Length: 396
Image (tube, rainbow, N blue to C red; front, top):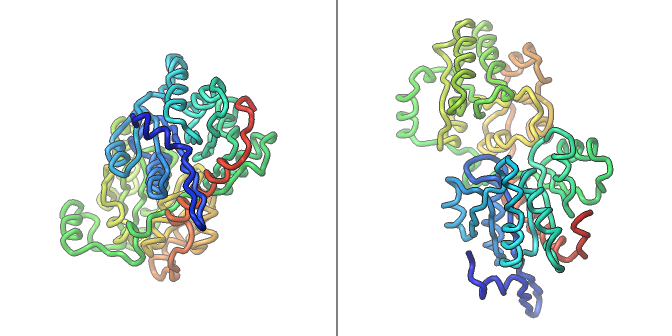
């Protein structure tokens, strides 16, 4: 952990002719740092805090992303605050010690159990207590347990769909505390018009020769039924029935523990006669390159998504997206690429729109919103606003 001398600088105010800067210590709470949108946002905000001269600390059970977090200047403190068992509550005093020792000014919780842990820890602290901020990353099942995410002094919503969800299910929430900050894509990592080099293409198609020689449809999604893999397989079958030769890559569907689900999908592909044109792939680190060579990037989740990061990533690369118009995906496509919107579950409209986009996709403009720097700047501005606001009671 950080030395006491360094912790003592947490409230430092730097003054100059045109500047008054209060250095904050922001402690982000997440279950673990292995993978996921909330976890990626944790690193992105930590990087921005460090670049702006603040102190960034993350408390979690650890994971493969910790190395990068530390390399980017944040500090990680290992504490399993997301383990779903009664023993986790015994860690509240230790978390309270961490917040006291680091002189935390803001506690930012990104998941439900860590949020409860942070809230309980803050309640037992002497004034001045840290401010409590939450981010609602998903459309969580409504109820008492999920309600903690609406109790921050500021509640960050990653889309209007999330904001509506919070207000609908927690009507006592003051709308003024809800702040819309969509997640963003790093346009230096996903540059407009990017194409991988010939060596990468040769390696990729050597690995998956069945994907070569026809328009490629890619569904980048983890191996869960809600992501609509079956809909994508049926779409491929419908395109072939129309005489439109295509290939389908289900990128990320092969995961440990998902073997039975993948088996169902393989059976469906065989029954529809498209098995030789579908690849069921494990997660890859070169998603950008795969998207860049895809004729269409699919977003066929059967349940509304809270945001839809792959939609923005694909459009940032100037690749067409075809998706179901509900949740955060509908918001993104309505604003950025309306040609890719299809009513959820409408198989006929899905194949019609896919055929149109394969033949001639409308031009995609350069991304000027939903960028990583937009999200980072908005989050740091929120921190500054919270820090300058009189504290609420911790049990409000």
